Image (cartoon, rainbow, N blue to C red; front, side, top):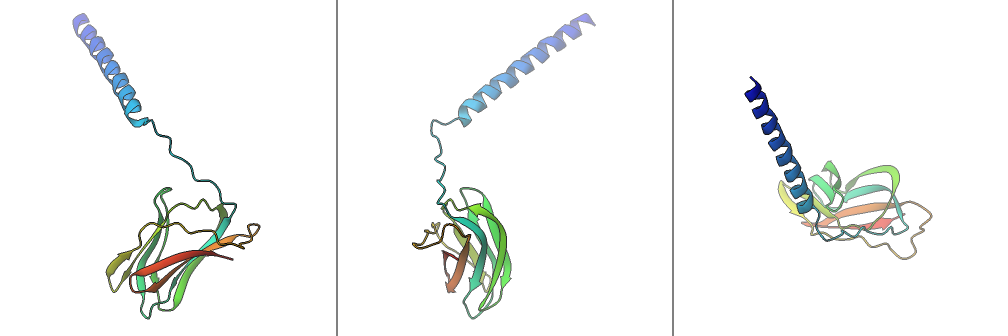
Length: 146
């Protein structure tokens, strides 16, 4: 009986040592020498967004995705010449790249990643809205408005 307890202790010690080694290796592997630069605040806050469909037919599965943050928002169906919009508690606009995806007659479309520039003359003391527009077959863009 005493031999089996000793064997158990040695096994537990080896397991603990292996776990510690794995933790050290994983920490070392996950710590790259690069520091990811955080985007700087633009001085603009966003208080809502709208997605407008200027096409003569409905679009579906519309998604706005910000890969750098994992943030996304979407609308299931937007009828012709109409929009989907929502307001929310104001958030700082950090000018991260975004992309827009949607379907027209079931065919998927998406933009490349792009950054929405802050327009000159925007009143930084008032919340802005992100306005995404699907304006032609397979084409979309966005701008900040007040």
